[in-house]
Image 1 (spheres, rainbow, N blue to C red):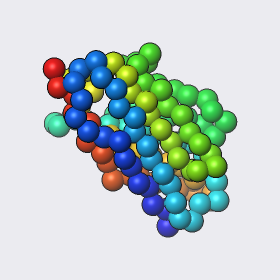
Image 2 (cartoon, rainbow, N blue to C red):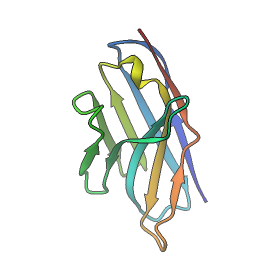
Image 3 (tube, rainbow, N blue to C red):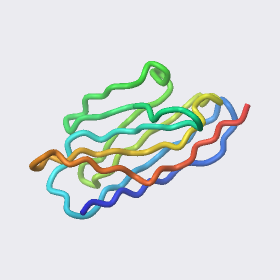
Length: 118
């Protein structure tokens, strides 16, 4: 089994910054892609950013230039630095990892609330 523990959410004013962390532990041989999703009230979960094992990144258009995803492979941890936050960034943020093992299993974190006040 794999456990994902997220941290770093909270309440911040518009224009502020937060840094999310997600640490994976358990039966991990190797992690392929790590990423962040978010879900606002009444909306579907959407992709925010992804990073490959080699460090290639993909961002949603809505966060390009404001958010930065990074990872520490030695710690099995992914980060999301969020700058210039906007009220529309308010959501529950979930991390997601895909393992490099048979079937490429996918694991999700429990979610962390990010609230941006105007």
